[in-house]
Amino acid sequence: MEAINNFLDFEIFKVSEYSLKVYTLFVIFLIFLVTKLVLWLLKKALFRENKLNRIDDGNTYALFQIIKYIIWVISIGLILESIGIDVTVLIAGSAALLVGVGLGLQQTFNDIISGIILLTEGTTKVGDVLEIDGEVVMIEQIGLRTSKGLSRDEIVIIMPNSAITTNKVINWSHQSKKTRFNIDVGVAYGSNVELVTKVLEESVLEHTKIQNSNFIETRFVNFGDSSLDFQVLFYSKNIFRIEKIKSEIRMIINRKFIENNITIPFPQMDMHLISKKD
Image 1 (cartoon, rainbow, N blue to C red):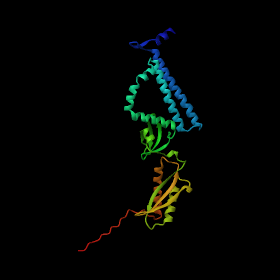
Image 2 (cartoon, helix red, strand yellow; image 1 turned 30 degrees about the vertical axis):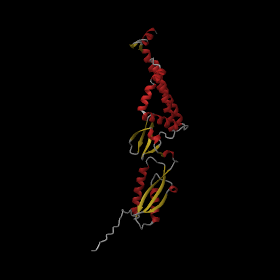
Image 3 (spheres, helix red, strand yellow; image 1 turned 90 degrees about the horizontal axis):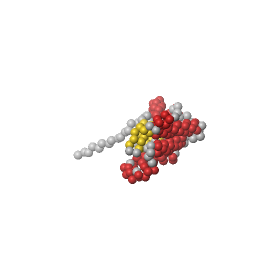
């Protein structure tokens, strides 16, 4: 026992009145280990509740992130106290410095506050599909300063949290289970309007991801400059990959138009030349 005490009291280095002992390193390691263990147990408990359908994925993740930051702040404070640094004195002494740093890092603090808002407010969660500045992304992670999203082109996008809280954002995941989309198409003047309507609705229904004909609607939108303009509307649950579905439906429409001799016209312009006689 005496040998263990001597080992723990061994000074690694000493500067003036301050000394770092093996015992201090052991305490730091123990605090770090306990923190990781508590977070692991907490994560297991929270996500077990999630599997039981008591809370959803987004709320589970947000709650865990908030608790994780709080626990790490407490742990860092305990580590500083264990090596002889008075945290209260440190905070009070660095107040003026923090003000100066804060002025220089306003945007960073804005992103951090935005991250706290996202995690606590619940309007944006992990797994939500957002449209930000015309870009559609699926949120994969919400951090304290930045969030990570996946675009429809499988590109990972790292965005500051303030871009989500301050800009105009469409959260497609807040819609009902089905969201309505549309495809625009023009046909040549003289086409059979009833046939075009029938073909458009059949084309949408032919797609494997569109199953209910009651939610398909075709509208005769306008008499265009070179075409009769139609719009076919349908509902889909697959919000994130909707562009692929719309592309496949357009292919079906094109094939059926060819089969039914329905023409999609080229833009046309009539020019009248007047010759001026002498």
